[in-house]
Length: 218
Image (tube, rainbow, N blue to C red; front, top):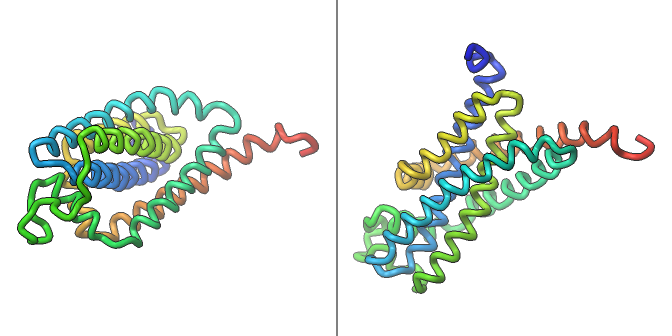
């Protein structure tokens, strides 16, 4: 237990908390955006299904990812995947915020842009379309979250467990609050992006060191 409070573990813990916060908010925005085009009576059901699916997927991916990263080469590949996640986050942060407001309205059932309609500007869609979009997003973003947490926690299993539990809790309990927080305070998302970028670079470096002895002629 004392290892949990070592300088290295505390640094990893702070990284994990920031990663969980930003990616949980990002996941919630995507779920809200997919559900925004539904009628009010269907919207809440779609959001609940999306949040539950995200939490379950995080648990499932956590069980597999922590083992798979022990395989030589997958740490390097995971770092490259996180680089793509960073690029995707950067593009989302630079885009127009109008869609985000529609997602926030759907999550909170409140008229954020004061146009008299909750998520009224979102494209209309069927429940099947929204559910399919949510499931695809949940699979991708849950894997991103678990991979980033595993990479940041490194050799600290207590930090890894805490990070994964926090990730599930944030999606299950505070998704709406976090999405609102990140929408109002964009700098938090940028800090999270930098942290994930650092973790990606560290994973690529450590993965390359692992791979080097297996490269012919190296």
